[in-house]
Length: 58
Image 1 (cartoon, rainbow, N blue to C red):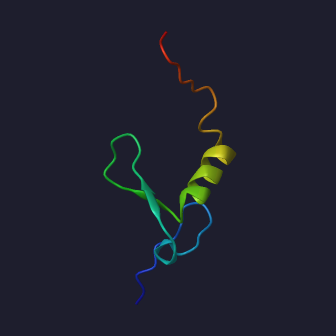
Image 2 (image 1 turned 180 degrees about the vertical axis):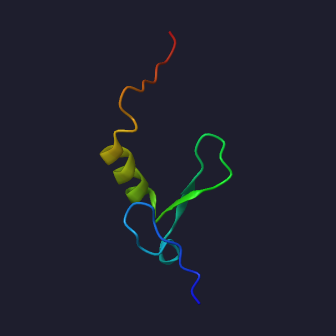
């Protein structure tokens, strides 16, 4: 039996890396990614940051 956890982006075992876990919309479950690189690639490919803005009040 193995304790491997697959990355949601690339499918590699996250326990062999510096994993990042993401919880969305207050859900109890976490989505595993190998590292910030896989998370960033997922965000880019899915267009998850499109239409968002950050502003500094002035």
